Image (cartoon, rainbow, N blue to C red; front, side):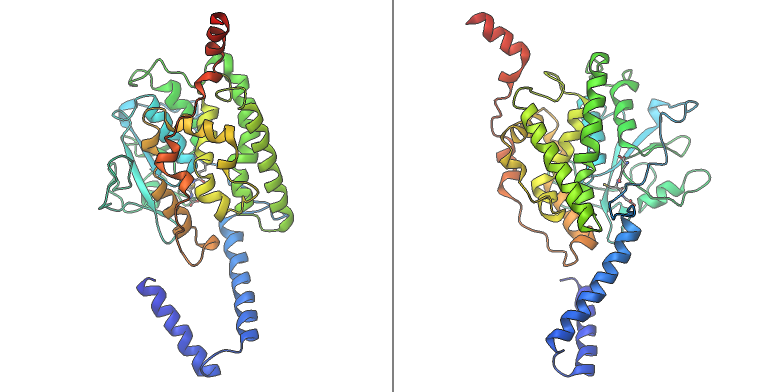
Length: 372
Ligand SMILES: N[C@@H](CCC(=O)N[C@@H](CS)C(=O)NCC(=O)O)C(=O)O
């Protein structure tokens, strides 16, 4: 328990003793805590997790979009990426940056979730050499991400979210929408990319990618948040039903297809992966996505391991930081701040086990067929 929590508990104990003697009558204690906690929770959730009239979480839209600003001229040498490791949306950008070989040309600053809800930059003393770790702001030397957003001309008073792509020369937020950023990293920076031949959104697959994103975003990527942030039973039931129905459908599809769109990895897979890798370690428990664990879906779990084992992907998955961010900082959902033990299925040894999904490739099937 932190010093602060200790002194708060002592204060509450002292007041209680003054009012009621050595202990509060149990019924009174329970009803007081229940109503106070419930009111505080409703207040916090209504402000932090906006919902529609049925209590269903509605994600606020991103304010800085790349595609909505056709006049925006981007100079590749001035780019800087801000991310946080627990965030699934920021994780998308780290994966595409790594796969495209943009690590040297697009430097990154990795923020840690701060106790008062803002992303902060802190020196990290115990780095895990195999993983990306949080640290200081390398572009602007700010203490918080909020300060960085405020450096832009005209200032800023909205949500300071990650991922955020920053123009170091113009001191401007270029974009804070993950999908725009990954599309841009995929094709917009080929002149400075180490792996320009890789196209994660080939023209022939664009419709298919869009179709998958349209299913996966509301039901899975945002679906887990709609479970965790639901403010009514009805909203939760609807979100949980949509989530598990979609996971079952994906399980079925991935039984016959190596990736979502066939033999090649696409942006749709990157977006699905960053939710799946957090599923058993966070969403299954903290967001009440309890019907099944991901490890119980044989094909989805093999697919997860397949992507995890693509060179440079595992380095972007810091499970310790993911747990720390969700369990310790997402205060309304885990007020005690206890960080649970890591599920064994989420450890590197398990994620590194053979996936045997190469045999699902159409090309492999054709070869096998012609040999037999
Ligand atoms: N639509 C955004 C969502 C980004 C987002 O919600 N990021 C969260 C972390 S997972 C955040 O930074 N929240 C801080 C806040 O809301 O103040 C995207 O896909 O890029």
